[in-house]
Length: 438
Image (cartoon, one colour):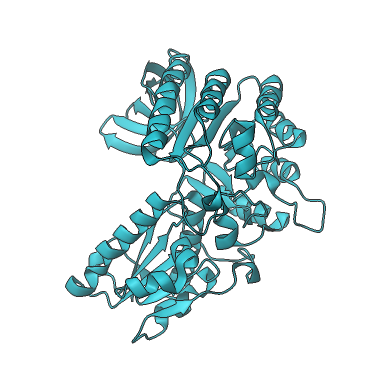
């Protein structure tokens, strides 16, 4: 049986897909790169915001066409989209044969092999499953980097976020399991490990022992002196001085801080259910920069949140100018009736939200250009990821996280994919670098 897998959404979804593909291959089934030869098509979806929901639905409908023009006899939709909308969505999309929620990833073989004559549903409680027990097979999609999921779910109650409903409570993996998987990945030749979770820096807060993120970082740093380790999806409330010190103490842990702050107006942050203010954020960034002067920062912001006034936006704009983050993404607030924030007063119209988003991104472009120009004529390590032409490659520096930041174009001969090279930066763009091998 041939199986084609499509993954949408975030890095955490990528890990879920790789685990499902590992189970598929371990069962003797064949993964195929294109849908035209697939007996079963599996789509792992995102349902976080409206744009992601629309992308998921469009992809499902596009792939459903292969049931008419190819050998495909079953279309399975898994992940956050079915978990969020359940039977209501299923009734409007009869093209789908099987719906699998976020608690059903470990039952994917059952979903593939089960005969269906009418649409079927598999929605186990996401809190009832163990997160990636030892020995779980995994089919990596990259030979040089991997996302390492250290926890699942979230205990926070941000009013704009559906994740706790889709993924359940926080469930941290045992530290020994994470270290064991990391060791296996390093021995397999991977050059970069990216730690991910819904609230990565809160790792261990739900465990009965004293495990926490700083201890995990120390353990992972001791596995190799020739590996890049970074973490994404940190939280301003859970990043501690111990975590900052762990980053400072180990060269293998990249001084890259992904801290989605969402806003800087104290009033809007309270409405969002975030328990900090602008002054707290400023002090946190200052503490990190004092301890690690070369730290690189990424954050995300939401504009157009219900009740956001012109003065709130001015506070946010001023904060961006002051903090001068290296990488910044801006999203317009995405409303939905199943979000607590949908019941808040004074909604902001779409036109205003788009205008504010565009203003911030224009401001950030100038800030990013300034940061990029500071690297001109400097030499940096670049992890080579792709060959574009004979002597032109693309890769990433330590301050460019996969898929979310810019890239570095490298001119060189016979460079090996998945290896790091020393590159002198010869030109800069708003978000990317251009260089040549030293």
